[in-house]
Image (cartoon, rainbow, N blue to C red; front, side):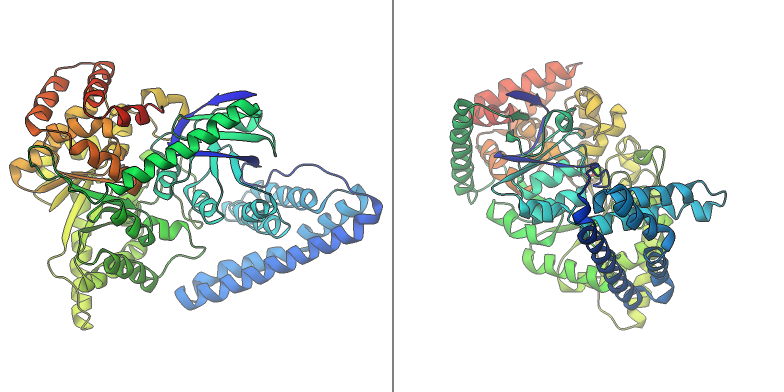
Length: 585
Ligand code: PEP
Ligand code: MG
């Protein structure tokens, strides 16, 4: 038995058999076969190659109809690779001569082919190596080295163990109905963790050595509340966690039952609680958890979960669905926040040395006007179907808002000419998630109709700590006085100039911070649906005057330790159960 400590990233407890995912499934184990199996193994490879060719042809047709023949040409290249004897012949030879399994032969042949391309002088040829890697995944997928196939083949609940998962892999795991996941890498506010909370998947990230210490098929207990993975537990511990899992489910059910109560402090101040979503289908869960609308719709997930870029019509459909499900309630849609840890298939291999400081979010959109215009046109068209607000991520310069407005004006003229209706008064606001935007909030307030403070990024950029890097996770702290000073000043400025402000970073859903944020003047909080009931319960136990005096006291502290200890004392007084949950108890 062994306990691996990590960071609790998704709620609840999962108990099941471990399934290890290779780094990107292309590191395939070396296994040999008997002479009698050679023909069958060759047949497996041939049918996997055939199935991959069929996939590529299908994708080509879809891309051609959506984005035209030129865009579809990339798939011709993929098809020619799959037919290239330089790639397929060594696979057959390895199986016949070396008697290796089909998976290993495929992985080796693709790897050598990619290396050969990488070694070419001409950049245009070297870049094609990434297409080979992409195809390798596809062929291995057809050979059964695929997440969902492997999961379906396992009996009982499965806990996935991986070095790192991308946000789109986490979404795929959810569809495959896994019990939970643990990763070596990652931090609490990385997008994979956020997705785990949004989808209600128990998860522990930043475990450091989970993939080294856990073997396929081991029984594991994954405690997403306590941030620990227990490997090969004894019977006593297993029983204890089975009991805890039932108890935590009962507690969550009891909390959900209070979801319909008003979100109002004991002295009558209304606090608006909204949900953060990645897909419109999460909206019913926001409402059933007691949220009154959507404060952050992360639209990039439509890109991240589809193989070809979503068209204007695809996006319009999603926005219309969100509008319909919100039925007149607030709905703030954020424009694409791609880059950093969220790359589309097409841009996956455009490596940046420092992607969190690179071409991400609004910068990526302005640098890719076709992508941005498509989204903004879909948003404008959607606005005819119900009230929406549009929000720009990672703004650090007023020009970014002005340029966006110019594009929107241009699109508005185009829509007018085409007689397509849209809301002429659509509110354009920004996320305040860079120190530049926070420090210059007064200037930004002249350009933006509202602010939403994205503390996940604001913390990482203020403290210079990567939000997804477990090695510096101890330095990533919302309670750092530098972060709190910026939050407070943005809220004050918004109030002063009379524009709406809210918080949509993860601290908005952490009961520990609720009294402080309200004391600083926040009246709207947006969070993962599952966090709403607990925050609401804390709000109902607060009074504003006390919160304001707490905020003043916290403002005088010079270390995050002092801040945290004061916030813990406060929460212990208001809602000891919430404190126990936040400490993983
Ligand atoms: C944030 O940065 O706080 C935020 C809400 O945006 P995201 O987590 O999607 O980067
Ligand atoms: Mg952000």
